[in-house]
Image (tube, rainbow, N blue to C red; front, side, top):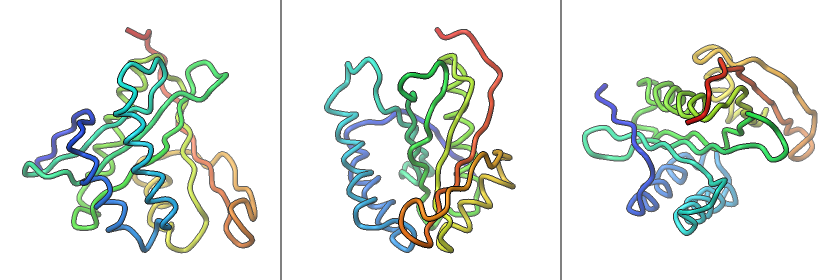
Length: 167
């Protein structure tokens, strides 16, 4: 697949909204709203010293996925991967892996040493957990029972990066 990875631009808001809503079998209405709010916040604060950072995946001139990451407060070189979502028409076509690799490269370039990704234990997230465990080889660091609500555990994955000096 011919995939281009780039930074966020204002025109991406509607495409990101469409992607999270196309994944409503996984994301709740609240999660969809939060995803768009985070994009809008990032765009509204272009000079924020510690912004939400985005990578956008395009195929054929169309946005097919996005990822959002940022530093974890009070840590040295630790980053949260807040979002990674792919349009269902591109599931299973390596877009998620390519997008995550772009995030990892950006994080490493900023002196990042650790990436933390959290997800749910619900059945709807089986594919997401397989992605972290098998496709991109993240380590399961914790499994917190009943975190989101009874029967919905939080699963935390991590990846340690080779430390590079920030630019």
